[in-house]
Image (cartoon, rainbow, N blue to C red; front, side):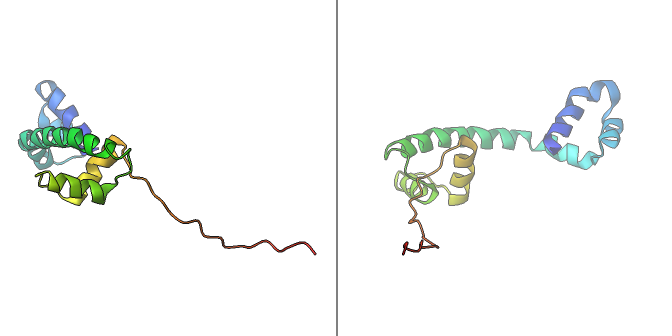
Length: 115
């Protein structure tokens, strides 16, 4: 949400000025400055995530889409990638990938037999 407001300030700063826009939108100028200063790092992270997403899609597809976060992380690590399970989970969530969950159904009520 902050990124949208900062982008709004960035787009209109020539016409209205940063101070006025930040005050109107209720954000601190320092937050806007930080957002602007860290833009290249965010772009690099998004590019790295896109590259990782392509590899993850391939790893996820090989066993018919059954691998979840732990197995995908293990496969990527075995392939030479240095990734954390939290990053793998975030990227998989953004791509809409999920592993297969095999759970035993628990029967909580056993119907009585008719007499």
